[in-house]
Length: 84
View 1 (cartoon, helix red, strand yellow):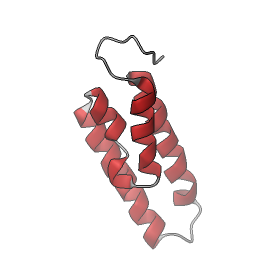
View 2 (view 1 turned 180 degrees about the vertical axis):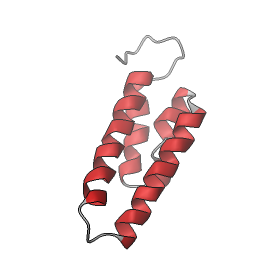
View 3 (view 1 turned 135 degrees about the vertical axis):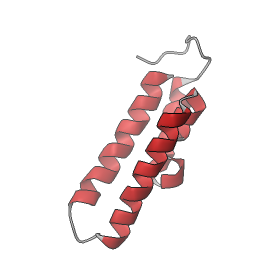
View 4 (view 1 turned 135 degrees about the horizontal axis):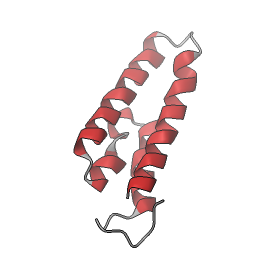
């Protein structure tokens, strides 16, 4: 679980907030992971949320992107907090 006294010096709260910004700006969804030093995971999370954003634009009439976009974004913030 995230705490303030970790080995890599990352602040869990800041990491979670940086990743949560991706709910509003998909290009920033992996920012918390990048802040934690997980570059591969951060880039993958950015790509996943950008695909979700495209699905929201072109398939807005389906329920799936409306449910998965915020759920996945919340998981990314949770992951960034716990990884820090």
